[in-house]
Length: 562
Image (cartoon, rainbow, N blue to C red; front, top):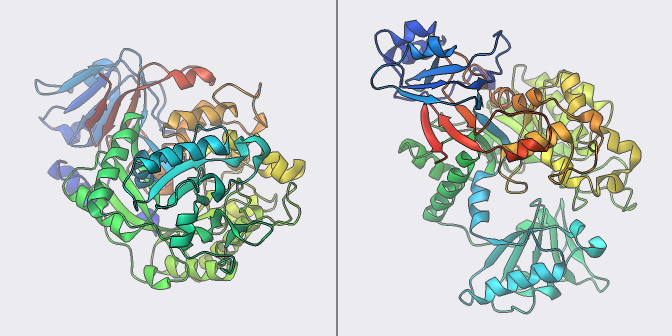
């Protein structure tokens, strides 16, 4: 059961703490841990938001030693625990929260994105193509040009782009991934390299977009993306990308991430970095699951190494709403012949879930459409009957929920892993896709909270921005960064500020079975905290002005704003 698997503790902890954890116990009072030794790090003068439901009052200070929080209290109480070697940081009223953890992101994907062509800001297909063509011409002949960020919903006419815009370059493949990762736009050289022609059939769970003449237009959706075999990155390249992405993540206050869907080679690089103590944040990873290859999950997950562990597996039920690949129970309102895609057929998905749960993998499934979510719940219910226990099944995104399925989510113990910025990114067109009735069950995190369904928040970066403050702001306002629409989009679904922070702290910890270790500022918990550069105020646009002053992981300051 996921909740009973405890991550490897830092070897810098005191012998007492190590023995307590090995025995399955949590430490006692601060004095029993400190003995005659002083705290390593003390924070005073803070607005400490503990997220600890068992604590009354408003503490202002925290003491840390050996990677653990050893005391929480007043400035006077905590200062008394310091000594000559203790670093004391006076926060001057700044807000402190438990370490913020992105519960659904792609850290390695961010690293790759930082090195690729960025077409997010382009307002037309022609503008995006011009950026990609310029990048291609600056590179050696034959080298693949990779990019990301296009979104036809932001362009005039909202039509998919075509290869014609990219075919000014013919001697090297160009592959541009859609903003949500569920479609690619390629040139003729990439289609030729993949041997995709008018005669190539659509793969199961995928679509080759074609013109009236049957020829591929240059857009491949969901499982059709796999027809284009982009050269694999070397271990050195993977490491470089992870390091760059991790540096950006800690700079925005993240002390951990849930890395959603990596291959074995990427996991090996993470383990290497973790063994060398070169991961500045905690990485809870999910294997990129192949539901056709159950041998992947026949063996139990490997144990944690330092700040890295991969004991989850991620599958896909459907595609994305933006590319009309999300699987719906009835057709799209703006595409009446289209139900979306089964990236994994329900029967195969259920078999994969059962195999993974039997071997003690935590299962996370991408499911956006109401039909897809229903199939995921069917699979989880069957697995629960076959393998009773607390397996912490997760539904990733959970964007369009049929009314009856909220109760099923709760009954099966599923975790709602939701990304608040998806709502504010999708709101210009989501209702056109779904209609006025279905939109009531979309991006419905208030409904989730009110029903007592566990909620963990993330961003899905690099699909969305990296900063968790973007998600917290979207959760409490239901507005975009410009403050529109006035009053928020379906504002009845807003969270309070405390709920939004909790979803990035307590919720994320629960979602990885680490609620006894992290998610609250409390003696005995890991010393992971995020410190803002000000006191967080009203649940409004002022939240976006907040920056990070310190990011602290395991009692070590891994980022400090100078």
